[in-house]
Length: 307
Ligand SMILES: Nc1nc2c(ncn2[C@@H]2O[C@H](COP(=O)(O)OP(=O)(O)OP(=O)(O)O)[C@@H](O)[C@H]2O)c(=O)[nH]1
Ligand SMILES: [Mg+2]
Ligand SMILES: [Zn+2]
View (cartoon, protein in one colour):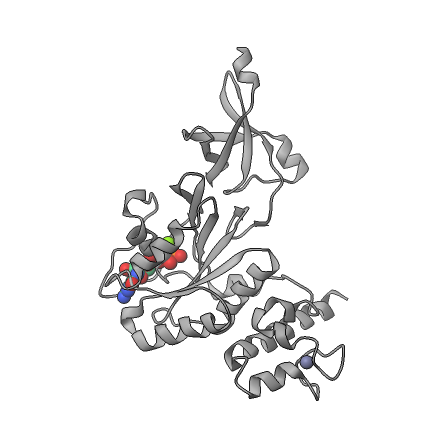
């Protein structure tokens, strides 16, 4: 072994399939087919796409020897150090779910991730796509209505992503909403290894479904991940915060939080609730408040179960 090999090489994990990692080394080189040291299994750490790692080289090649502390991490989709999540929802086909969308924004708010709302397939129902994007911009989120079929909003979203230099971002959402097709339309030069859907007349869900998280380098030290879509069922099992914390994860509730009659107001059925008043005044949107109520019920039930 030469002394050069004793200096660990810093790299970013791009993907992991069957325990074999692909990484981008600091010097820009892509290295495929490397393993993580057995010690991680004993420690219960699984290096994830998005992780910053150090590689050691021996006679068998490179090996992941150290994982840097993370900002955040998720098991499904398997991702670490996420800065921006493009919450991707189709206006039709599959039909959108308000609660699923709001669960994603809430998870972001809870993990210091900036959610950006992307409504896809806008050409299928332009009015609905624009209304969905408007709902989220009224809550203070950056939002886009796009179509990979007729290129609506593609250039604008591309500029937005290009301006987020140094960030780790991911497209996330239900299976079949068009994440892979969109990344392909935005960055055709990336040459997505994953099977992207061609725009077909008959939308067949799952035909080209993405099977693993893959990070693509869109700019120097800037990464964008395509992720496998989830079904509504997967998402039901998310357990993300305490019920007392939930109101803080809806940014548009913020101006009203300390104005309720009761200091321990749950904003569900109390008299003199400032949040409920804001909803009836049309200042807080009823759709979002509806999600708050059902998420609150979910979390409350979970807590009762645990006890
Ligand atoms: N009409 C229409 N169909 C689209 C559009 N974008 C994608 N599709 C279709 O939607 C289907 C799913 O597209 P994908 O890009 O594979 O969706 P995905 O979100 O990556 O799905 P998973 O990988 O399973 O999570 C394919 O049949 C695409 O042709 C669009 O803008 N308009
Ligand atoms: Mg996909
Ligand atoms: Zn209240």
